[in-house]
Image (tube, rainbow, N blue to C red):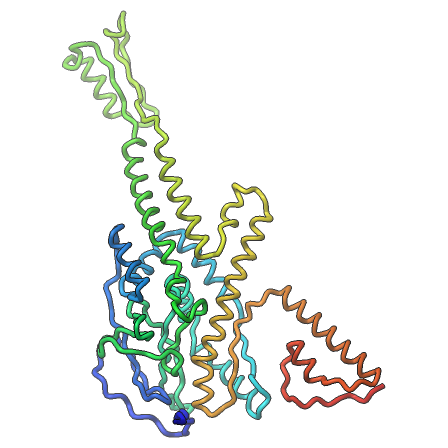
Length: 434
């Protein structure tokens, strides 16, 4: 059976408002073109404030089975850790610093106008905060889910999209039926179809089980070890880091005026204090003080746990830990290698996000408006690669020109497309041969 195409834009026609019970914070919008589905409101959970070793292992077991209620809350809790926070900062800052480009997919009439309209509206469709939420969930959970909400705009006489990230704790995956589900505040657990115009699934590293690529799996236990180690180190410092004064007094001197004054001098001792210490003929008849402090190196175990945990976390999120170990490795080459690895990880994520928003946002918009499709591209390509591509294009053009001078009928459009040149039309007007 031939599927029914999504309806195109009808100027001046506003869709009927959905009849749903409005809750505080409910998502408001119009039915999705093509499916008619109304916007859903995610269920809410109390933030996770603490966890234990047993609870954390149970959360990770549920995560591996496709139940993300508690692992999603755990991912939010883990951002308290400075190593996780810093590694995420590096990843997200690098990703969001790249410009977003828009390419007309073909040379059909109106393609350039459609591209310019999408580019002008993109900052409202996918805000930097929404892009950051999607990227954060993809890093920690292995996937990021968002709802594309359609709302009528009176000025444009058409509906416009807004990408609203969906909390990962309100997502499940049924491995038996191979279906994604969301937990809603009004309709309970409902099945969804990513890419249907309403739901966007950002999972560039796996189509089969993307949650197994979440950094929460290899870092959660190290996060908890580091948290425990920091607390134990603080308690140990209170015990071993606070020395005491050992006072020696002659036998029976505690009740004498001289002994009481000596004790009083110790109790009220501050900075640059002076304590009178009477000396007798022997040590048993003399007063004396001694500062007693622990002489142990047990603190090194806490340093090891926190340092090892930080390295494992950076390795999982950044793809490397060489930039943080430069003080011990002692060479800038290691830092450069680490930076290149992280740059490649960010570039791969940018390519995945570009393909995702093109398929889930730009294509449904083009179908609804009846306009040519536009490809969204996050330009994360390194400057060196762009320079090499430009040099290759120049060499390709020079070769084509040289063959034409020799009288060879060269397919210029084919060579231009091979060199990566975007053509406005497949018809190429050749210049007259010299």
